[in-house]
Image (cartoon, rainbow, N blue to C red; front, side, top):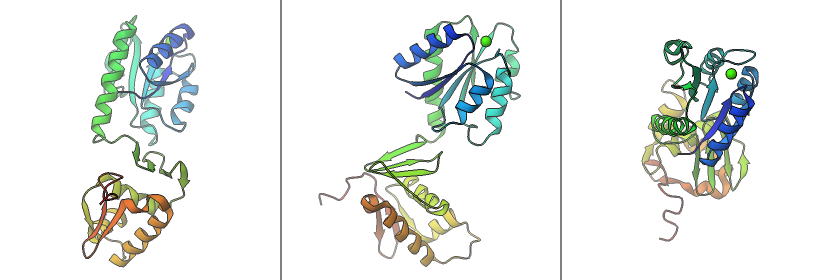
Length: 236
Ligand code: CA
């Protein structure tokens, strides 16, 4: 289980050690030496999967950083492992008040931290239903978090509604979706639109997807279906 990890630690030797070991474990790593730098790095695109966060930082405390991360919609779901010294308010750190997912007491073995990182990444990916934020399907790539999509590495400019429609398709790929179901999922049940509106938007979405348009199939009289596999049906 690999991820993008943000290491927040003002002791530069320790930060370097963690960076080295996380990279050796296959992770991508960013490092911040202050709380403010951490908040900036955490909000940068792409948002990290996990933060290793030292409690004692020179400007704002780790608990404060943690609270800010949990408050912002963009960073709310990042997994957080707090580094604490013995006796440093561990109950508060892992409790509801601050909201860290795990903690490690200093001095700790690097190996143990690596294991905790892996375990936490596994846990948080599972809680997202097994789908990572960035979904790749043949020529199509969708970043759920950033609300962006690419076909053959060229970004496709979608409206918010088209993006919701695309997400509705990819999250239920391989399954039939009726126009009525799409209407209530994407537009909301109270919306004053007809099933013909669904067809219009699907048509527009397909045009924008270009080479990836074929992933959305029309089932006459039924609705639509996003393919289960990118190459499905192409050799039939
Ligand atoms: Ca420190």
